[in-house]
Length: 88
Ligand SMILES: [Zn+2]
Image (tube, rainbow, N blue to C red; front, top):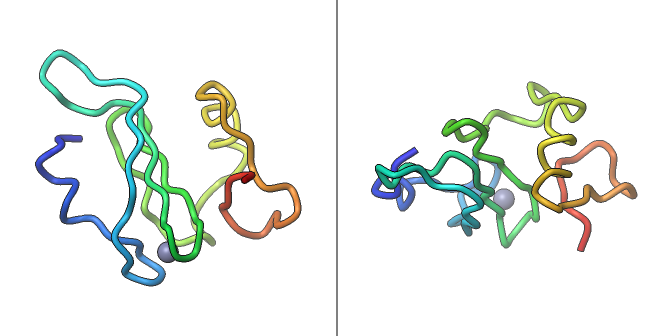
């Protein structure tokens, strides 16, 4: 995903502006691995293989995202297994 598109993204749940962490960028400046976090509801939205996962909670698969987050050194909030939150 291109950096120039990022300012257009907001949290699908509460429309807050998202914060971005970049883990990997290719030589064209495309972000291949990254993570958006919402400062309001604390949900996270990963960028995996260049695609931002911005679908509603009920269409997301935690089991698919967990190994990727682990690779990035992030841990999920185990106290709230229903939602997509990171451990603080
Ligand atoms: Zn939010």
